[in-house]
Length: 327
Image (tube, rainbow, N blue to C red; front, top):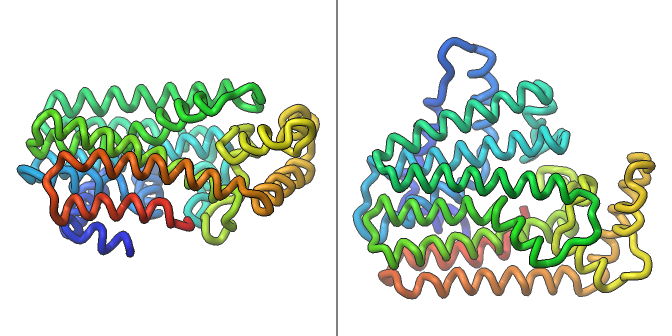
């Protein structure tokens, strides 16, 4: 199973999305154009625009609306990553230097702002007020999730419910936008559009839980960024919450969070290494995968009201792909 086989029904039109992304330009800044090109060359899986196109395939495949929406969503995603890297002072993403690392914090923030603006413009090219409203609401939701995460940094008093709420805002909301807007612009009936939204939401939660597992169990070469980066930034994820639950008296996460202001970089890395060792020798990774699998099953169940066939099969395969991925 590969993304290429999953994307087969929309692969040619994903090329149209790429053309729209490559058309993004400023009006008079060669420096800005250079940064835009750099940020979009890093590629990625293009899962979100593929979801928009696949969701649009069920009924009336109206590319005049679907293509700009798919591109707008990918631009929004890219902008959020650029801002994330600036906030976290991250040097590497997708195995290459981040915009923050190459040009600095101020320019990274400005580039993200520019991409958000261009994304909004592309969303209006759909000529659908409902799609534009979904787009702006999702951007507000993601921003709220980012603010909540920032204020929760190095806070040990967080629950699993709060974790799910956070990743729902930061990650699942964009997956839900991808599928809901695809259904809306593809002429799906309201009930089926809601089903596609719910599919995207559950798929996004499964995606993020899997991402959080890989942050401890993968390696930098596979992941394309430093291992344990969330923990270094003081962000509690499901694997680290399970360490706190199962080793409440003394554990590296508790020591890291309680003393982070006074720790050297080497000491922080040591605590992250200890946390990885606990996860890799325990059942924590397995139990986190069970949680991700439950959301993946929920996503597949949401598709039952949609027409059977190759498109539904591709979306079901994507659920399995997300659970099995290693990067």
